Length: 242
Image 1 (cartoon, helix red, strand yellow):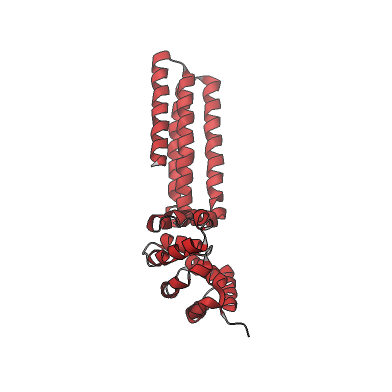
Image 2 (image 1 turned 30 degrees about the horizontal axis):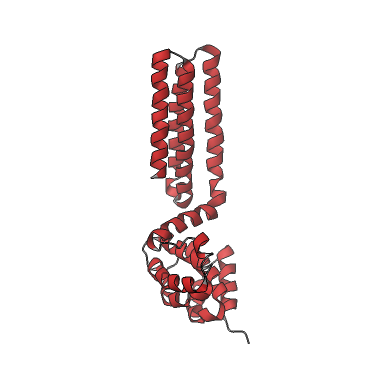
């Protein structure tokens, strides 16, 4: 909703400057309108870029939005100018396009941050108050009341809801023993991100989560990279110390 309001405000302001240009003939008003279009384009393209990090098949949409917005911005910024000032406006838009495209191309390096933010937002719709910043401030009794609600999130068909639940439970591991049966079922079909998050949680739960040992051992086969090392650490924590 906030994004919709933002883009409506940007559109209204751009329209206002276009009307002022028609009234005064001052090209600076069109430049202002073009700058507003560029600002809106930046945020829209970044939003699509973040979506493309989570859904690689949609990564191209960010560049389509950027190209379309840059073209609209260039048309507005150059319409009121002639000669050298028109060229300068084009150079500004070209610079905006190149810099924004570069920043979008860097977004995959922040995949973990983008994934956590999306997962937390999705989980909060199913389990209100489940955001990490809220869970962190709960006392033991409040965490005990919240823990059973995560079972519904772990059973969700939306992977982001499941991930959000796993991330939040990692901040209250001792209260989440009641969710173990649902978590064990999830381990059988968990994707790489879910398996990693579940391993982090189980490692913190320690021997209290020993019932998940067999299910986690089964997922060790085929796991690689950082996920494998995290699963191995969780298995070590789950096994009772001799």
